[in-house]
Amino acid sequence: MIMQKNKALFLDRDGIINEDVRYVHKPGQIRFCNGVFDLCKAAVEKGYLLVVVTNQAGVAKGHFSEGDVRVLHQWMTEQFAAKGITLTAIYYCPYHENGTIPEYRKDSDCRKPKPGMFIKAAADHNIDLSASLMVGDKTSDRILLPELKCIIVKSVYTTAGYDVTSIMDVIPLL
Image (cartoon, rainbow, N blue to C red):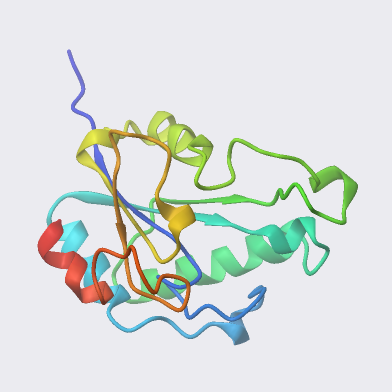
């Protein structure tokens, strides 16, 4: 029996799920972006899994620990669940080639725009990347996977080269 593959809505964290303030790592720092819950509900209604993919260079740069990231992600998962939204998974990359913490100072295939987190998610959750969508707010959110459609939302990081002006503009693209 052939199992049908899933489609996923991949979401960048800082700038798409929550407002991007530098080195967010505590629940008290989180302000959810306007429209993110509406986008997620619309995606789930259309059969998408919700997968968060986020670069977290703050670990490599010594601003916070992987434990801090895991605690924050658990809290975020609970906030989504309280609104009736299930996050299938959250993947993060703690590495950065200019990190100050030796064990995290490296060029990693999981750091966006490289595809490592997406390939892992696809394997873990039987995801068809060609039927999926990535939403981000930086050029690094254009993932180096030709089969994955990437949508960039206008932000302070993208004065040009964006695809839509708000998170709500993504809903019709699902």
